Length: 624
Image 1: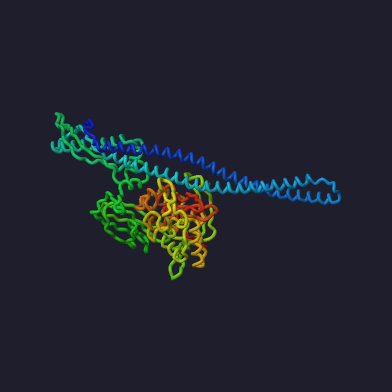
Image 2: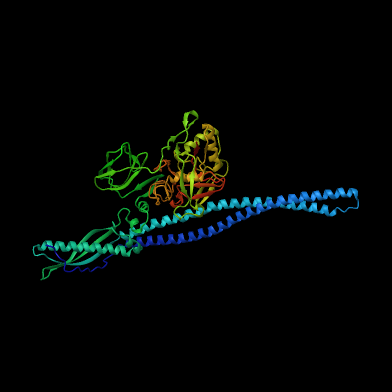
């Protein structure tokens, strides 16, 4: 028999807030608010800077036009001078026959043409100097623009992290509610069961009311109420007390209870409610601390619980990676700690199967691998032999093809536009990863080459938000710990060309820097998204600021620390900016201390000729 409720009366009032939680929420609000004010100021500074940058661009254009006109004028003045000289000589010849011939006008005209031509040459010399100064100033301004852009994006990241912290604080506070519940007791139901059911319904109603209050009292209540469908936000009942309970003469029972509760946002729920990337929640949950220069991560997972994960696929000779570690081919079973894990099944010629799981019970994954859309038949691995039978950089063969270059999503900087179709006409080979410290060390040992950082004023590093040269920094000592498998940094465009010229001479092959078109082709690897794996940078997929790796905002990472793209290339997103070959020096790809938005595939960092820093390196290309 269905039991009908005759009344649901809720009398809710706050018995007592957690003072500590309330003060914490106030601090989080202040943090978000102050960061937003700082962001608005930084954006205004950036917008003002762009106006000044436009003026510098116009100055360069105007000086180029002036120099062109002066040179054209110089050609005409040369012609007029020759004409004046001819006329003066004719007057001299006429004076031989007629001593009274007046040649003063011809002499003055020739003298004036010489003076005019000299003034033109002086003007050209001054214009060349002005143009060089303007280009130098423009190059520095472009570097400063990225500094401002990086500071702006860092504030965006900090705001989102603070928003997550604020929402968690708002949800994790404790409170008490007093609830009254009336139920009809079924004739076949004992008094005890009726009382128990009434109390249970009262606790459920209190939980629902408390959760709704958490949603509605949050600072961003309008936003999170739009995203709370199937929300995993939960309420924990801490204790309850029956205030009163009595039966009426009509077979009803009424109870009044006081319930103490605490809210909770598990895992990435704060990011779901705020509709932002889950990496901000991971950043909040997995906090790291410094202890004797070692990073220690703390997570909410209980690693004392172990569960069995079974992985199957419909292909042979595949390879299973769990949290970045290879476990061999399917079928396999492995015991893992409870919590979050990333599972990837890889096979050449097939699209990677990837699944993030929350392991809280024994689980089976059944994967169906799909043929890769790209034809990578000639994507063979290549390694040339160096002196003493040592191996050169690991290369991947890249086929010719068509692709879209530039800002394909409409949110890029001015120098990423317009997007356009491009074609790679000839196949080539390119480094699987950036040139490493070990690679560069071998070159130095063979040639005794001295880098520009070592011979001049050192290498630039970010200090107080701006790149500043430090005379003690160079490729051996970039300002952080590195090993031979880290990408080499603090090298200039000249240094990179010197290394590649040595590599060409040593191997009898043609090595050089990739141009921008070649770089973006291999970095995209068939993708039209911001990053080769999608439009969200995600968490722990690359080494850039706020990207969730243990190297983020700390240092470079060892090459191959993250997944390769569909061409088999590592670190085309983040780790270090990569110098490309072209009329202007442009670096691509982002780095360990630049925000994720500046690690998009189409972003272009324009540099001056000799600029080097501890966040810029390079990758080798070998022509066929």
